[in-house]
Image (cartoon, rainbow over all chains, first blue to last red; front, side):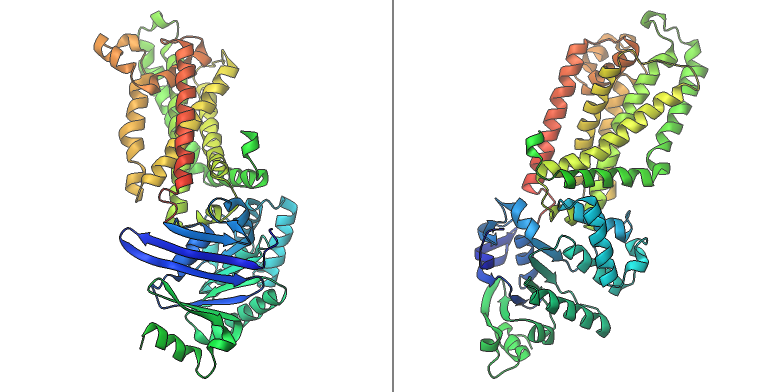
Length: 242
Length: 259
């Protein structure tokens, strides 16, 4: 990993889906060790930005770097540093959840014995160890959310990207995820979170960025942004939602 | 090739996962072609073949069709393995597990290819094993057979990946196999030598690449063939290289993999 204090650097990122412009010269940085909330209404460009960052989307222009590594030309380096917890439950239906984690670890070059050890540790940590020989279809929605987190963390990434991790979770699971994310951040991991829950962003994050219609409309320290209004009020003001 | 692999553990894991996938549903992936081959051998080789005068080839009809069936199932099994695996990966979107990992595009293709090659060769040798039920047959040139099995399975595993990237639904996935690959394989000489065809069709058959691949397998098994071995080798090498490069290119540009 390059000795960079900037974990994520996005400059003039522009992305079109055919004629529709999803991102319009989006630029921002996320510092190493930050807990960054990336907010915006549906269709604002949050997931598209994440996809460009992780290499799941091509983009037309701009620079996207992870710890100094370009995500297009140096993708083999940048991908090792990112763990993505996606919105959807996209698991291989042929594998048990244990096999799924062991394979995922090995795709990141982790030797089999270490991969098995880490898989067991994460399954234990997230209360899924009893289900290790089940396929993901046998899990409840909350368990699948936890499995998504296990998969994102299996290679011990420097940056954890979470796309609405607590959507549809019950309170107990939400608190468990919050605690774990706070702990990871205290240990030095950079966390990039998108959420529609303003209280989640307000409680967990240090920096807040708001995107609307593919443009970055506000970014700054949480304390600076939340001087005399709640995040919800600011969000509604900026996005024009009612 | 070796210096292009920077993540050998990742490639090995992806290969293992692909092999695990087809072995876990062996009743759908391995046994059906063996059953259909046994029926072909019995009906065409034993029941009908004994009445066909095949003396000019120096083989019994059964001996003639066994390499053809081996090649045909090698082709279809390789194609089906990669096409279904990659398409299901796109359908369920668990292809992201691979796309997010630090595997180069060549490594991704090699990992997926391993499953297609392994399944193709398993089925091909299984068909040979089934032939012992009817008439024991030896392999005249084992190394040549290995060469053709690997080349053919590489060609059609790559074709399967291209088909899986092109397809938008399960119906489109099988179009290439049903309307192009199987007819060309059958017309390429699975059940007949070219000399049995009328002259115009013989000439036309030389434009069918399957003919050279099937002839290569037949020569490896029986030391007989109706086409020069060197042409068969060249066609196999050329197509394997072409299909492999094309598949890696599609992964590199993210064709229907990245939005």
